[in-house]
Length: 197
Image 1 (spheres, rainbow, N blue to C red):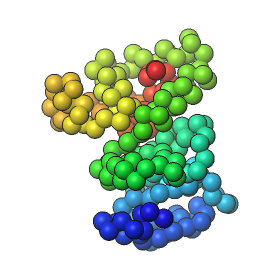
Image 2: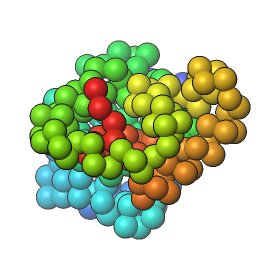
Image 3: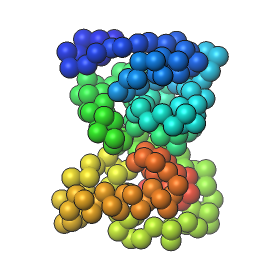
Image 4: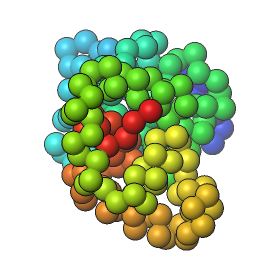
């Protein structure tokens, strides 16, 4: 795999199924986890749920050959910091890893568009707007920018506010939505109709 060739990273372990992955994560304490959607015995989603229950905050990036919107949305709802197909470019992979290590989610524009489209198809029009008042207008603008893959510094520049103010707004957003990360905030807000295409 490409990551084994990266001089700036060290490959510390590999597991073919979820239970082994959980044990390795606990033992090796990696900085980041790349996880396939399909693993025998214990699925990727079950593994991510177990990590969340253990309060393990190691960033997870879903790296898969499967292009399935429902699974992608579920993975992002569970806190994945990115979702990449295995044929993604080196640049996309490295940028996603760097963002995840900073605690940020980085979704490629095509992934964000598919998430929006998928949620829009599933929800009746009257349900899509019922939770929009939970966030202020500024918080919705920031969340929309996060969904487009912008970093806090870029959002601050675009809005003419400080990066610290952006982070304070993000903390408020997390508290209001009951989430812990950018990717969860985007996924939950899409499911609840707070964000739209």
